[in-house]
Length: 421
Image 1 (cartoon, rainbow, N blue to C red):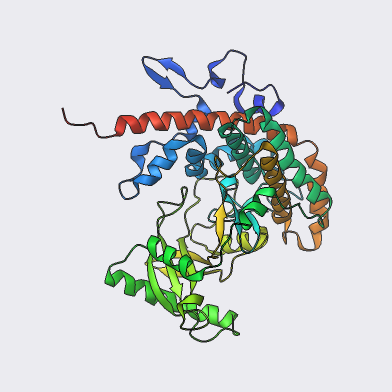
Image 2 (image 1 turned 90 degrees about the vertical axis):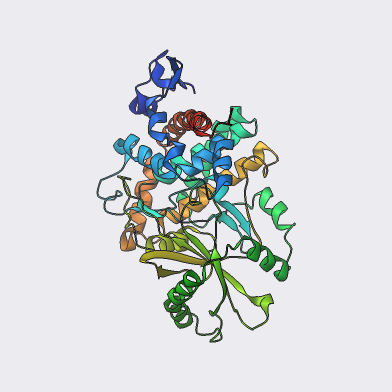
């Protein structure tokens, strides 16, 4: 990781040429001493129980971006602490009119679906400063550029992301061009409902009979709410046909999740609808956001305001004393993969611009009421000064993520069971 001499770099780390504060780690008695930022981003593998999901540990170890996905809450906490001096608390600032935040904006949250494309998965949605999403996505771009051998062009990617945000703040009628990767993915989509449902069944993990009955009972208020808000659908549409547990994702992989097959329009399985239930997880300890831990509406609101095309049947379920948020799946859904999806730096730049536009629109949607235009003008006046901050900050944070990931890999190697002599 290189030392930056920009203003944010000085504020973040007090980098001095040749100091260990900017080093990826220094050897001390055979052990690696982490820099301050990397130490804050390091989580020890023994802090989590991976025995029920060993593939998750493999994915986290595999790449810095996989680790980055897993540490969203400590990463966001660090961003809030580092950038406190940049958060606008004036009359039109985040204290009075906090922005809508995705909360976990990274490249592998960008999905291509039958509905369209864009950032999805609003588990960590909240309200607060735009820096939370901006820094996270900029770091993701740098890690993606590194993974594909385009590291020397990472600054360009961050510039394109900032340009998309600036363009749509300047002109809210702007529509981003469809990235080439989106067109390529959509050309491969198939429309075979039975094959899709067979795949859903294959990833749905069985529940014990008491747990299955308890979940079905918990779904009854959700079904009543959905029927009331979708009166055009037949009475049996939301009847659960099959339920099971789910283990997918990285950042949310250890959170309880369920899949439910609903009857749909008819009794014919071909039109069954799949709904996912995800536990509303705690965002405690992140100082610059506003979020109630057990409030599903922060997630639903984030999806409704930021998604290009929100999913159907957004709602909530109370189950086992915990709150879950819900959304319907679509048959064709493909998230980008950092090391597989993009064929050129230009394709990464296209996605970066598209996400900049999406976040620029979503951050400010419905937040100011009669004062909306005043807020937009205030943001526009500040943006010209922010790209250097975004470049410097994301460069430093990306280096610290890589350093913390390397420490995680070493620690998991040390924690692995040793073969018997």
